[in-house]
Image (cartoon, rainbow, N blue to C red):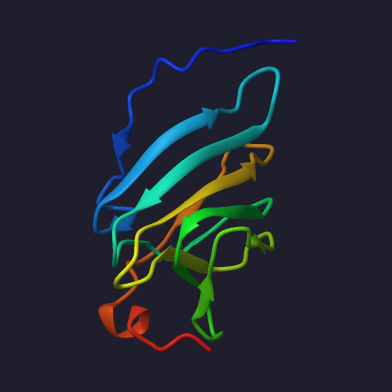
Length: 134
């Protein structure tokens, strides 16, 4: 058993990866003992990720608020607390808060053989984000 105290401060998500105010708290980072990356991610209303993929896939678990997500070419979907969403390896997608609600989720992904967890793409446009959920 290994207990790791949380000494890392909450950090603001980089503007290259996110639109709007997004806050990140690391839960675990890849190391010699694990290839799992997990973070608590909190989105202000309207905030969202850029389009991105994960070489080994990603699972997000919604803990509070109301959010939205979309896979490339699919419909925008509303997500709520208790929902668990799996994005397949290489599936281009985004996720974030609804326009008028905060949203928080735990994001979990495994590194690939090169140590990569995520590949970031272009920002989601306001027009794409503003689509009504299916």
